[in-house]
Image 1 (cartoon, helix red, strand yellow):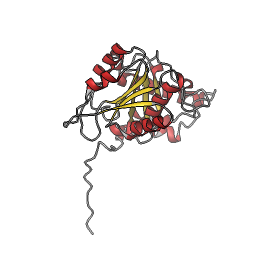
Image 2 (cartoon, one colour):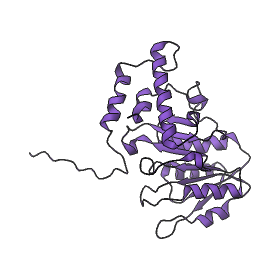
Image 3 (cartoon, rainbow, N blue to C red):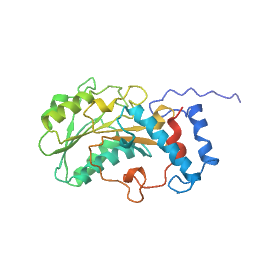
Image 4 (spheres, one colour):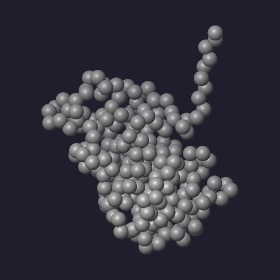
Length: 253
């Protein structure tokens, strides 16, 4: 039987782990396996490694501070942490806006939130997949807690004007928060959140040659976010659980 060589053409679904990424990760699986939350040096080395990785991701997002960067397990967790975190922190508003073409991690969450009593407006797209932004702006009101909008669509490749959307939304209601799912944009479009009105942005490492099971969430320092996972002090109290050191290091090349 002749061996067949696989030609993989679906890098929008996932990517192969880059050899340089794997090389950086490997020592933290075996040689440097200390708990980064421990008080002794064997764990302290790993805590410094996470700090270094957080600085790298800060620059990747174009954020002002590494304190605005949180590690998650996926783009789906980033979305849930952002959306539920905002709603749990302030229950005074019950109106939400998203698009009809969001990834399931956002769309299905909004459908669940409807069952929990939230009023959700779903914004459509035209025949070319472009978002009806005027419909979105018209939907924003004094009760709008959050607008969620993807950066790049995972099926059509259409780029949504997220910076413009965030700016316009804030001009209508300065208290409305804006979450951007940038999973398909990260690594393809330069991110620069600090020069925008975007409050939160999520990414997933496996879309650009990091392993599966690692994501990151940017949260502007002025945004109050309730933790999704309660427990220890990890991730500045926003996500409990022993840190995944090798996966956090994955982007350092």
